[in-house]
Image (cartoon, rainbow, N blue to C red; front, side, top):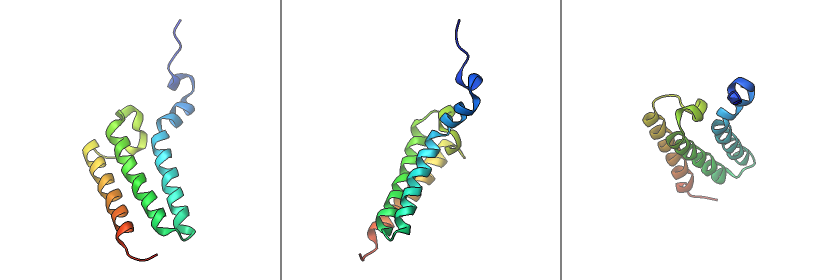
Length: 99
């Protein structure tokens, strides 16, 4: 006898597993914003920017059924927007002179 799929046995757990990529990105952005709050703005903004680039990679590599709410628009649009936003934010944070 085969077991029913996870979404039938435990729908709440299946929903959490499906949203794991988004949760990972949100945790990374939260860590970056926490660093900004404690006056490590350059490192914090780089962390946020790299989290967005990571979100783009997750959106690019994961199948639609595993990506959860990271899928907002088409795959190409999501990847381009997340990549550009992450790279621009990281570039600006590293390009600004000062301490």
